[in-house]
Length: 632
Image 1: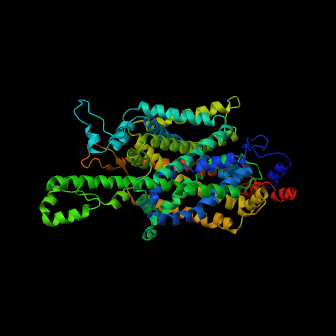
Image 2 (image 1 turned 90 degrees about the vertical axis):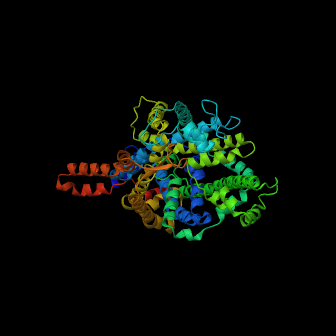
Image 3 (image 1 turned 120 degrees about the vertical axis):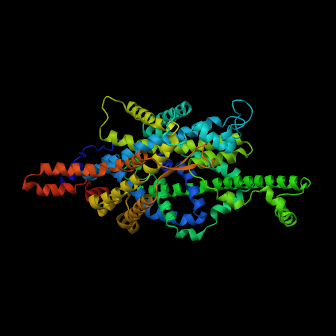
């Protein structure tokens, strides 16, 4: 470490590092926090967290979720913000500076961020499509279109629902299975190109333009959520939805799958291991309080999930109540016609009494009517996540709301803002490492290089604009957005513990913030967080090995249509799934082996044995004791 530290304090800098004077800076602390919050808070907070609460007993899910936040999420978030701020480099530069053997960790972060960019913006394209359609009156998903002969409605729509038909046929024009690609859909291509154009405009000058954009993209969703909260609480059935959310089912705490889902949700929700947070924190002043930032970003992210769940569940309660009332109306109409009962005699209030009476007096007639069993709890239990919650459940609920166009427009603007803020971090995790390592030709302006990256991502994203695009997006989301992040985070912790040194890392933080990390942070970094990540990783692998990977296909010819047809992945598709989960992390062992082979070939002489040993533990660590003395 000696020569490198001396170079640092003599005014030189490690290879590839940026000096504080050259590196861009945030205009103010608010810009930085809003950018980190916008990156962490994404569409998953709106359509994934409420779903997990719904299937895992409402309030009971919060217990493993908060445990995972405290012992897994916050320590990792703190680590990334601190290391990026101290070394002032992107992900590749940071881990390569700590040890050349860890260079692959940064490369893996960059590769994963690139792949996420490719598919994540397709979600924004779908959101834009629905946003443009929301200005129509009536909403296009509120009724079935007529057939070509104008003699009735399209059969596929009649068998399912207008909402399902608009999503699967009008938007996705989905193929019946993943092996049938279909043609490219021009409307998705236009929306995808528009989404990338918006991302590029906001990103064109790096943090200079991102810092301005986040004032809107990071704050507007909270305004919309508040408006939805006020409106949703006035809807009939909102109370039932909220009771469903906050009533805990304690017996579900015995379900290990709930603990696994809670850990993965908090981990991916905070966007650690992407490299974007390291890049954002590298633009901070050296003596910024990164511990406070980590706590603020982590708590705001989780609070947003809870805050978003309230209007979402209120609206789900309204939808369940509407469906329950429609079910009762259908049964009341059947009973009224069969028994020639006067109108308005049977109401929602006395329906059960009438049904009991008629079952006693004429059970055969009642049985022949084949009445639907109406249970409000069953309608509340109908769960959906991801695109199903946003494009099917919510769009169906908004039809029944007065001024439905306004609520649809607001909802999809909110989703676009959430996704756009997350895209800033994803793209930053790709661009910053490449720029820090001077892999961009000097003659090429940053604006041109950013445009090239966006164009490449757009062209690769065209796979999701085909008939099978939705199936492939689910594959990317499932396999790219799972195992690679767990492995990268594990190696980040190992890098700090075994290469950088936990004690040394704490001294660095003390130099930057003026206070030393307490025992809680040390124990988490050295023991609890790695152990939790390892358990989650092994549990995930065990679950995957024990189950056959399948996907839900929308097939109008399926005998149980409109239920989705559960099909296993073909062999060649499953092979791609394995590649997507493993290839992004291959740089970690490959770079380490390459560095080891490089050292072996250059240390043939015995006199260099000690140099080899030192190079294994080499880390770019400025002389903290000298820095502290200067600071004092």
